[in-house]
Length: 354
Ligand SMILES: *[C@@H]1O[C@H](CO)[C@@H](O)[C@H](O)[C@H]1NC(C)=O
Ligand SMILES: *[C@@H]1O[C@H](CO)[C@@H](O)[C@H](O)[C@H]1NC(C)=O
Image 1: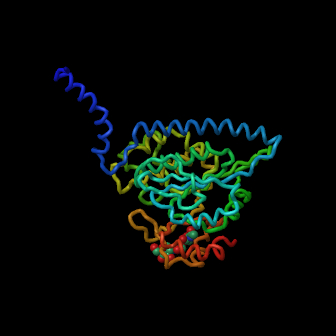
Image 2: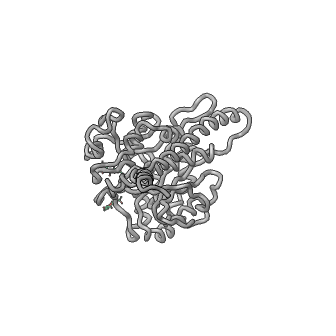
Image 3: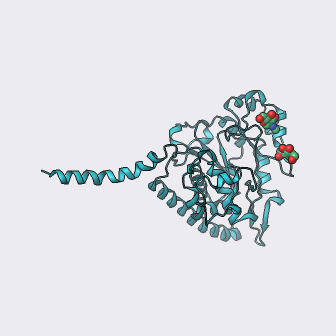
């Protein structure tokens, strides 16, 4: 028989880890805590991906002299917490270009996303819970980047989308824009190896930036991230391999960005982590603009304008493609699910005709 004091202290000992696990939930119920096991899982994945990448880039250099390399690919990364309603549109976008892309999907485990189209079959990566206004979205994006880096050394661009994003051009147009346009390249070495630039919006001097910077408390970001280095930009970007690697190797900024916000109304970690990190580590490797059009006119509660069925028309597609620069927007958000049918109707005659 066990004596009562022994049982008591044993129970106390058992409840200690439980307390440790539950405390973050009790202290801030709106915040999904990133648990230690999740964090360690991610670290192991990022480590494997960066290790494999350093090996494979050496292999590519060697094989370049002898055999022909496979065509470079675009990795399409979908970050979703609901059904991928635009799957039929994406399926048409990808059709006939199977050797030039890979698809990876991070679906929130609570969303129960079925494979909505054959191209998405078996493309779901090991996912963890995500929540808006929390660093879990950063983790999910990094998980997608690492998985794609690890999966195929031909993945050269890494394009991140939500379930509300749609293409504005054909696959051929997108592929050509990313790979062939010389203004997008940083430099070519004399061995014919090309370094591509990343397409990520990086902005400073935006209204409300100070509130965003201090969302975790005053001086919390110091000394790693002085306010002068803090940036904002679109969460949806297209990274070149070099910057994708840089993102999964980071530990320093992540330690700050993973902290919970005290002011939830100013908490959008995913809009700051990527632009701030890349602007600090490799500003010349980035174009500082995004290729995914978003309409912030009349935004509500941090959400951009969401296009509805009645707004979809050929004119809308033409208007969304236009930018103030020499490039054309390639993708757009945010579209509500009822836009699928009208978009499919103009897919072949308007969207994929370029
Ligand atoms: C942006 O959204 C506003 C409504 O918030 C709308 O009036 C305007 O036409 C939209 N702009 C484009 C280019 O679609
Ligand atoms: C282009 O610039 C004008 C004037 O600054 C601005 O009103 C418009 O929204 C810009 N268009 C795009 C596509 O960024």
